[in-house]
Amino acid sequence: MVIGLLALTSIPTVTGIALGCSEQRKANKQQDDGKRMAKFYTDVDCLYEDEASDEIHGKRAVLRDSKVFIDEISSSNRKKEGHAGQSFFFNYPEPDHMKDLKRGLGLVSTIQDNPPVLNWLYADKETHEVKYGNRTQSCDHVPAPWDWRDEETTIVLEKRRGFFAVREEDGAWAVYLDLDGDDLQGVLGAKGKGNSLAVPIRLKRTLVEIAEPEKNGGS
Ligand SMILES: *[C@@H]1O[C@H](CO)[C@@H](O)[C@H](O)[C@H]1NC(C)=O
Image (cartoon, rainbow, N blue to C red; front, side):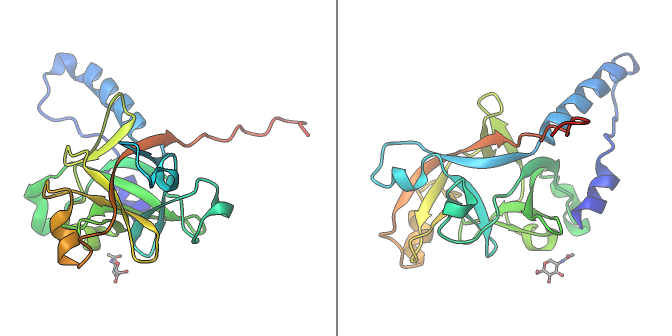
């Protein structure tokens, strides 16, 4: 479904720019759009040394059951089957009744390969979990603005770096965003999970390598 949407809106619109600069601006904008659309995996760093670091540091964001979890980079070593989403930035298309919100860049992610399906990543405004869904599922939460920092290496949402890995009941680590600035104490306490482990993390972009085309006559 998002494929059609990409085709529709990927033409950059240049408005209100003095004629003399418009060509240069257009070129810059196109270059930036290209970089924004480079696909990446999302990998995880622990911000501080922690007992749980082994299970989190250097691991990958993996999608399953509408949520973003942290698991091994190698799919065969994962604790549960999931999809390592390939993501890129794309302007979030506000639904008609929210048009004036103009929240900015969304983060699109593959949620499966075959057939390819794309969804939006968003923070659930009630639970603060990072989830994925279509526009209807994401628009009432926090689906934008996503951005990059630290020379394009770190991912932020609403300019916040406050992502946490939270250990769920089954032992899996899920990704949360601290929307209240209380280190998630509010949401975890409300769920009776006040004692759950919540470890501050950084979400990093790891660019997807584009496979070399096969050379003619190569073996
Ligand atoms: C969005 O996802 C929900 C739940 O899977 C589904 O019921 C709904 O039809 C989807 N909406 C669109 C526009 O695809």
